[in-house]
Length: 465
Image (cartoon, rainbow, N blue to C red; front, side, top):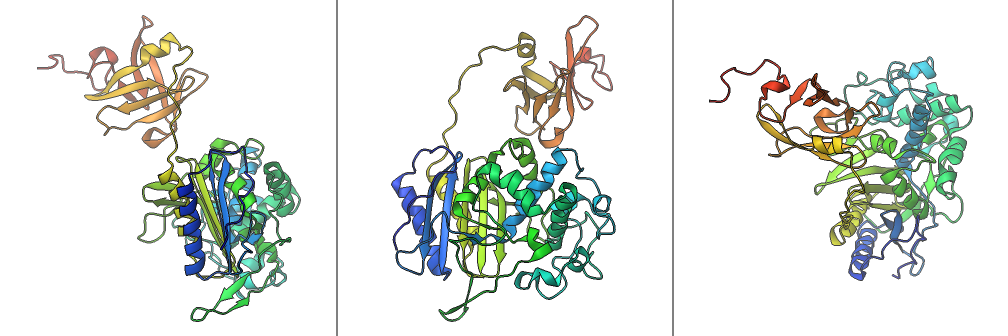
């Protein structure tokens, strides 16, 4: 089989991959297509904002899919719907803590919050009442109530992670209610067009792959039906291409101010639901699946619809993303293949750190705060980071530390770990000199149990002995 030409980059061209890396990627894709017995498969990798590799394999010699071939992407659609909801949040049109009933009255589960729907913790049923929505027309379910059935709530809201396709159909209806137009139109205008994703659509547009079911015990196949799923479309109807999904991987890594800020996209990648059952590896954020694989944190989503499988993962730390699309109902383990493609690049060609460069200037008052501080007898060090941000780190590596964002009032807000959201402030004495640091009532002094720092509970008057 011959390798297809590279997909045009989703951003300015990055450094070209080594030939050995490219061959390893193509070999992994070829093995997945052969062992998975799928009519065709396309894979792609982005690194630092650009597509660095893409290729396709097919059952037909010389006719591998390219970056412009559409495939149905299934539940990857949910990541797009989640972005639309987060845009509404950032504009102040809703709060993630709002109950669904506030915006869609008389809709179950009325008391579940929007955040719970995004994280699949609403307790809502996994599927619609029969017949199976993925293989039937949406005309069978014309109203929202038709998606839920008589007893749609299976668990108390907020208690467990229970994946729900109707839950994302409700989120699509929420977008339509607050925007006053079909969610697909909103998606095109607010997300797809700004990101240049012109080949991501609700219904297939040529050139596109046909969906197939491959017999489990014989090398024969038959076509899968294709329907417009109507109100269930936000759960998994979108079609897309490797070219477009490379752009989506770049977006999910760093955001885009035309669509969502990097901070909001990072919020989506933050765990919002514990995984179900005994497997504590995979989790879920706000519309994004999370997976820790070989010590690497991946965010993205898998997808399946009759005749199609898809997966997209990004590793923010590595600056690498990978995707796989195929047109078989089952067989190839595309989630693992996409993770393997990402790892091949990240492991064989690890990202170079930015060269150290000194600051042009630093506030002397901030410099005076850097260095050792003590919480009780535990030594910490305060370091000055970008702009006026600071980092507090335990010197023995065992204490709680965090990054802190500088605020206009001269305080800092914790960004991660135990101190996320907590306030760090400098406390001055009557003479104007720095007395201690206060972090959520914890006192950090320049010396262990420094009496002058006002340590809570006081200090033994006989001191150290």
